[in-house]
Length: 133
Length: 292
Image (cartoon, rainbow over all chains, first blue to last red):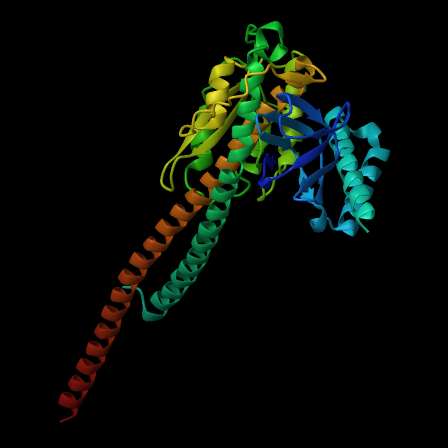
């Protein structure tokens, strides 16, 4: 199976894999070769890729996944490999977003939505990093 | 004839100007390369978005979405993308001239200080100003576009357009008006997203029906805004590439002019110096002749 993860800014991941676990809005699903063609919504969380026996993790923000034939494509706003997560930077970003949310009376809806996405993505990254230790 | 000192000071100041324009040209050139690269690095995302939309489009008839609804245009909603700084040739001027031609009501969202200044000076209705800065971040564009989409859905504006200097090549940037909402046709939109020289979709031998989770409507509701955001993002990236290339060309012209001016001034300086020397010799010769 071929997996690619792209964000508006770059292509984050592309490789041949054995199976993928995706955090969809209706729960985690594991995609194995021969899966039914699928378009699904993804929420912020962890993508687990297994390739020749070893697993790899990526943190992802909300987006979409599409699975056709033996090709899985993931569209997300942000995605990062577990080794590249800088915990302190993420924590700072989360704190910033949370402080902003605390004073949210002054904000418009889309600002709130933006900060909420940031917090969710930050949380997913931290969880993943702590699990990796 | 100006005296030697005056010419010398001018030569010095022209040299300084040339130094500055030369530096700015180099900076613009390197920024332009970066801007072009980031415009290209978004391609895979666009292609994938197009593919997902194409897959879902077979089901589209069942779904009526406000983005497709054509309504009478009373107020246009325009996202005006300009630069933050000047010294980039006629780039902003050309775009602003287009804005001046608008008849009827229009509301604006500005990106870039020049556009904001123009809109507030000409007392047009400015809904919001977004500072994007030199490196274009997707999340900021998302915020901006969602703001505009909300105005569209609330009926405050009847179209969403993005006006920007489109990058064609280093020498040509053309002011472009792209209409984003309402969406004219899904087919065109997909072609637009995939770019001109995209490969045709790979035919999958998998002919089983698609499954949508949670359901096609939810997915479409989430996908369509992404498409609009992506177009604005691309427009801003293109505008940035335009800005830096226009600045580079403007600075190169300025540098060439400075060089020409320097040549002329140096010639004038040499002539003046020669004239002064000749004058002195004449005076000495005359004085010697007189004293004999």
